[in-house]
Every structure is written in C-alpha cells, then in structure tokens.
Amino acid sequence: MRITIFAAGSRGDVQPCNMLGKALQEEGYSIVLAAPENFALLARAHGLHMHPLRGDVQQIMDSQTGKRFMESGGGNPIQSIRAMRTMLGPIAIQMAEDAFEASREAEALISLAVFALFARTIVEVRGIPLVNVEPTPLLPTRAFPAPGWPIQSNLGGLHNRLSGSVMLRVIWEWYRPFVNRFRSRFGLQPFAGGDFHRVLASTPLLGAYSPKVIPRPADSPATAQATGYWFQDALPEWRPPPGLEAFLQSGKPPVYVGFGSMGRKDPARFATIVLDALSESGQRGLLLAGWGGMRPLTIPGTVFTIDSAPHNWLFPRMAAVVHHGGAGTTAEGLRAGVPTVIVPFIVDQPFWGKRVRALGVGPEPIPLRKLTSGKLALAIREAVTSPQMRQNAADLGTAIRAEDGLGNAVRLVKQHLGA
Image 1 (cartoon, one colour):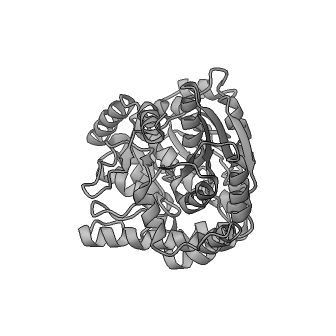
Image 2: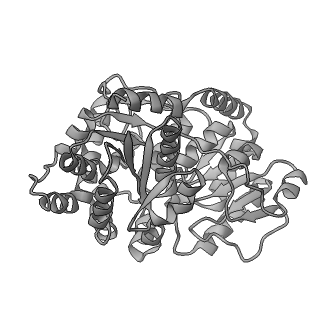
Image 3: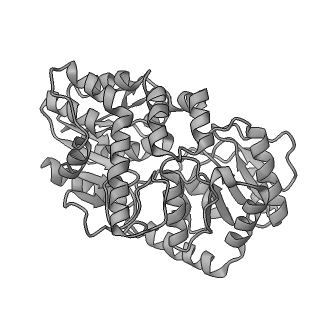
C-alpha cells in the first residue's frame, strides 16, 4: 500500500512523522514523506522518499512577525490569529498544493492533525482514507485545559472543555482563508467553524504521546488513541562533537539548556541569563545554540556549547534538562528519566510545562516573559537536588522506555486502513 505522510512545522512536528514513516516502511508499506525541504536530510537518513513542501518554519520564526509572536508568548489566542495568518499566508496554499501533488499515487494519507482540513480536502479529491496524528492533544476534553489556552490551571470540567472548543476555533481561524481558497480550486464546499472538530473526532487520530503522561480522557471519542511516543534514536554513525565526552567526564553531570527552534530578538542577552542562572545554582551546563542563535560571547569553563546532539544520547547524561517545552523535547526529557525545567514560549509549551509539574518530574514552569536568572537558578537547584523529583523522573522514564509507541501506531494504522 502506498501512503503519503503530510508533515510540516518544527522538528518536533516532523520527526515523529518521519519515524512513523520508517516503521511503516519496515512493515512493507511504500511511504512518501511530504515535508519542508529543510528536513530532507532527516528523511534520507532513515531511508524515506521525500516530496519537498515549500516553506521553512525556521525562516518564518526568524521573521519579525515570528520573533514578536514568541516575545509575546502568543498568550492571547485571538491576537494569535493575525500573527499566524501573516506567517502562514505566503506558504499555506503552496504547502497544501505540494502535499496534494505528493499524494498523486497514494492509497492513503496520514497527516498532522493541525492540518486536518487541508488533508480532508486532499482525500476528498483523491478518494483515499485519512489518518490524523498529533504530538499534542487537540480535541476538547473535560480532563485538562487545552494546549494554547492562556489559563492552564484546572478550573473544572466545564472550563476545560470550553477552552478546548475555543482553541479549536482559534486554530481553524489561523487557516480558514487558506483552507477554503484551496477547496475552491476543486469546486468543494467551504468548511465552517465546527468542521475542524467534526473531522478530528470522526477520523482515526493517533496521539504520539504516552498514556503515562496524558491518561486517556473519559470523554475521548473511540477514534482517538494515545500510542506512546515515536522516538528517534541516534544514528549508528553519529559521533559526539570534539571535546564533548571529555567535558562530560571532567566533572559532575551538567544541566542541559536549549530552546530548539524558538528565536529571540536578543539571543546574547538571553544566553547571559542562562549562564548567570547556572552560576547561581552552582551547576555545570551544556548549552545548545539552536535556531535561536543562543551563543554567549564569553563561555566559562564550566559550560560547554554545542550546535546539536541526539537527545536520546545526551539527556540521560544530564543532571536535569532545561528547555522550551516543545512536545518532542519534553518527550525526550521524560524518557531520559531526569528532571525537567520548562521555560515556555508559545502555544502548547505552557501545557507541557504544567504537565511536567503535575507529574512531579519538574518544578513550576517559568514563562518567558517572567524569566530571570534568579528564578531559573531556583528552578535548576530544585530539579537537581530534590530526591522525590529525581525519583519521580526516574520512575516515569522507566515506564516510558517500556512502551512500544511506534509498534502500537503501526498496528492501529493497519487496523484503520484494513491492510
């Protein structure tokens, strides 16, 4: 069976889709990964055929609109609509057109759930089945506040469910003009506000996260299943950058600090906050520069800087991990079994920060706008020295490592596609 997988976004969005494609290919499926061109090396490393999509998330987030969006934290869902439309406008329909072309020979389409309405349009025209996948929960539930909702405190089932409905409407408004313009090209009726929820709830939906981290809500539809995480392990040929292993062996385990694809207007100042926090907390540090360009001008001997390293190799060697709370990075920190400190920037990251805290595997998240070296130092110190937090993190890591997320996902795809 020929399957196209439609994935776009940051590495945390695309990488799980890449790993699902690899697992399905190993089961005999013919896979095409439709993803932005800057992920070509990732696809090639795992033997996947890739159909490039126009649009580079790194460039979008490096734009002035992208940086302002991250500086504000995207805390106002209504205001986020204008920012997202500005960022998506130049590429949204191009991306959908490229995904449509990538599915020309497909007998099924798997799509990131955030693009479910583009995907539904493609499968309507192609006459093929659709499976949606999500790194972060999207469907409204009484169990917890919606990712992206500005109030992440659990104020009860009614509030939680309402927050989910509102956030689905907000995401729909991000894409509405582009989705319906795309549909008009095929003579299809435009979607309305409730169609996003309807499509998500009526289509097979695979959650690429652990039920140990997000237990299945009682009000989830039968079509939605959490499989466990879809991890990528370090490739056999990967080698640590020069000096890294010597640094790790030269003292106590360091604290990892990295913020992935999240940019800053003043990355040098941000790096200074991080270095001061490490110094105040008395910890050695490993600093990941990332897309945000967090490169301090002066680096003390207690800190090592790298451009990249596989999280599954790096995180188990850390005393704790500090990051932005992206779904993929959070998953890797939890798998490693070390405490997590989250400094959320935008959208779903405050949700993961609160989830880490609720699980007892990390301190209270520090929103970006409230970040100071003192607050970060206190959080790092708690993560490194709390015996209970460290034990909770170790226990959760053991449970997550015992799961077979990709195996469960492949089984469900087979079940849904009847192949």
